[in-house]
Amino acid sequence: MYSTRCAFLLAFASLVVVNAQSLFPSLTYNLIVSHIGYDFLGNFSWETADDPTNGRVNYVDKATALNDNLTFVSDHKFIMRADDTKKVAKSARGRDSVRIHSLDAYDDALFVLDIFHMPEGCATWPAWWTLSEEGPWPYGGEIDIIEGVNLGQGNLASLHTTPNCTMPKARSQRGFTKSTSCDTSVNSNQGCGVSFPDQDSYGTNFNAMGGGFYIMEKSSTKGVSVWFITRDSLLLLGGEPVLDLVLLSTPDAYFPTVNNCDYSKHFNAHSIVFDLTFCGDWAGSESVWNASTCATKASTCNSFVDNNPSEFTEAYWEINSLKIYTPHGLLR
Ligand SMILES: *[C@@H]1O[C@H](CO)[C@@H](O)[C@H](O)[C@H]1NC(C)=O
Ligand SMILES: *[C@@H]1O[C@H](CO)[C@@H](O)[C@H](O)[C@H]1NC(C)=O
Ligand SMILES: *[C@@H]1O[C@H](CO)[C@@H](O)[C@H](O)[C@H]1NC(C)=O
Ligand SMILES: CC(=O)N[C@H]1CO[C@H](CO)[C@@H](O)[C@@H]1O
Image 1 (tube, rainbow, N blue to C red):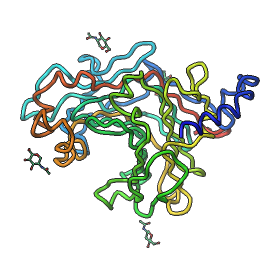
Image 2: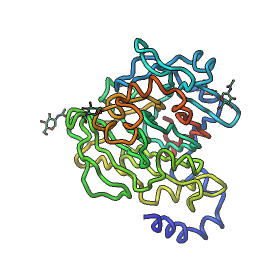
Image 3: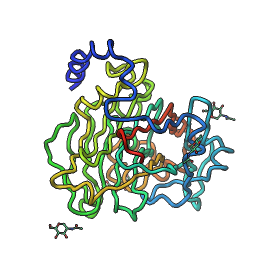
Image 4: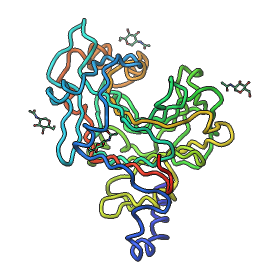
C-alpha cells in the first residue's frame, strides 16, 4: 500500500534530484491545457437540464450561478457550490446547484486535478467524471473518477459502458473491486466500481487535510487508472505530483481494457464533468438514506434538502487547478 509508493520514491530519489528538469513534461506526456480560476469560465458550459439521476436539484445557468455566488472565480481558485441560504418549495425542482462540462474532449490523456475541498454532508452526491462527447450514453463510455454520497469517507471510481465490458476481480490496484460488470444494463447500472482504501480520499477527512490530487489516465492501450495522492505525499515535488512516479505506482483503481473490455468498442473522446446533486438514485435511495446517520435528521432525503439550507455550507467544490496532458506526438 503506502509503503509501495515510498519504495518507488526511494528507488527513484537520486534520479529525481539529479534530473529535476526532466520531470515536466513527464516521460510520456505533454501538458496541453491548464485550467486555473477564470479559465473554467471560458472552457466549460453550465448545464441546466433535469438531473438524469433524479436528484432533488435545480441546476442553474452560468449567469445565475455567478450572480448568486454559486460559482466564484479568482486568479487562483474555481469554486462551485449549492445554495445554503434558502428553503426549497415543494413545487420547485430542487436545491440550486451547479453542473458543468468541458467544451473540449480528449482521447488518450492524463487528467490531474488539484482539489482543495469537495462537497460534503448529508444528501450530497458530488462527482468528477468524464463522458463520451458523442454518445448517446452509454455509447463511448463514462468514467467516474471522484464520487460518493452522504457522509462517506472513501472514494468510489467506476466505469459505465455498453454490454460486454467486464473487469477481472483481482488486478493491480490498491482499491477493492465492488462489482465487475461495467455494462449499464446489468445490476441497475451499478457500474464496475472500485472503493478506495484510504478513508481520507473523500468527504470530511479529505477536506480536513486541504484535499489533494486526483489523477486519471485514459489510455487506449493500458485502460483507465485512477490515483488519489495526498497533499503531503512523497510523490509530490514543489507541491506538484511527480507524474513519472505516479504512473509507475499502483493505482487506487485500475480498469484494464484489453481482454474482456475492448477499449475501441467502449470508449471514445470524453469531455469532463463536475456536478453536485442531492438525493436521487444513489444518495436518496431509501435503503442508502436509512442506513446512514443522516436519517436521524430527516425521514427522507428530499425533505432534508428542502428544509435545511444551513446544512449545505460545506457542499462546495474548491479547485486549485485542472491540468490535462496528452501522450507525446498526439494532437488531440
Ligand atoms: C462568494 O464566494 C467566495 C468564495 O467562497 C467568497 O469569498 C465571497 O465572499 C462570496 N461573495 C459574496 C458576495 O458572498
Ligand atoms: C456481446 O457479446 C456477445 C457474445 O460475443 C455478442 O453476441 C453480442 O452481440 C455482444 N453485444 C454487444 C452489444 O456488443
Ligand atoms: C426508511 O425509513 C422510512 C422512515 O423511517 C420508512 O418509512 C421506510 O420504510 C424505510 N425504507 C427502507 C427501505 O428501509
Ligand atoms: C475550448 C475553449 O474555449 N478554450 C478556451 C479556454 O480558455 C482559454 C482562456 O481562458 C481560452 O484561450 C481558450 O480558447
